[in-house]
Image (cartoon, rainbow, N blue to C red; front, side, top):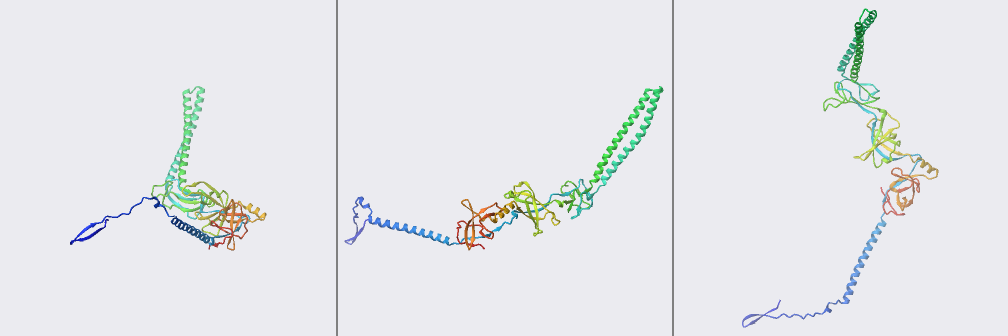
Length: 432
């Protein structure tokens, strides 16, 4: 702004404005040049800051490395186990139930009322034993009617045979008279026709007797259907009907009609049924040895073997059904008992015997203890709180265990799960 001055003149004030004085501006490019001394001071300060930052980062990295080098990794120790010659190892564990191959709920072939019940839970039955009787009054009436028809047809045959005998006599008489010229040809033909007609009636009556016999067979079958018998020897495990109830081979649509009489189990056909995850089904083969342990008898190991692997998978559970047979049955084994099984591997018996003959002892360690290093199998042996890197020679795996043929001895301790970066000679701490 332009500066102003106030001046008094003759008793009044006047305002005067002084002109603004501006410095003269020189248009000279030399005024834009930077002093070399200032430039040198600024560059030296920037270099010092960069150098200090780099040195600080290196010191931090060195501190972290030193801290980690001084840190002892915590590891889990696992003792080696000697493989006994001829010993079968466990490949896979599974659980299931005892199930019979032959189990039947016996039902009647007809719809009728139960008049007698002989089956009881726990009763042993033989093939053909009577389990129950049904009301057979209607069937008995039909059987009696069929027998009466048969008897009537048989009585008619006897009457026709008497008539035929008389007709044959008349025929012989007519033939003799016709030869003597006394009787006419018409009389002879009539006598012959009468005899032939009676023979045809007798044949018809005999067929009627056969038909009556067939009806008797049908009626007798209806009577037999009123007797419910055991189809095979076994044990009655369920009594499903009582005296006075109606039973039928088909469902009555929600009524009070029973569809079964009793349930019979063939105790000689008991086996184990388990579901094996399809990821491990390759470890199961027919006739493979199995050790079964019932939940009711946990200290009793039952020798068994794989009977068959059902050739289909359950897409919902991703499992395959396996059936296992007991080597010897026992009365303590009951249907629907819970059981745990261990699939054994005895295919390496000869391998272990050959190893002992060569002076080496096969050792079992967890598969997780083996580390691959440049194509070599390596384990970390524990000695005085330090690890020793040891190359080993492996045999065929046995389930979750690795077989070490050379490199370890019985009683050695190895790191079960070596952490990344574990070095030879490094001190470690044990996991409790």
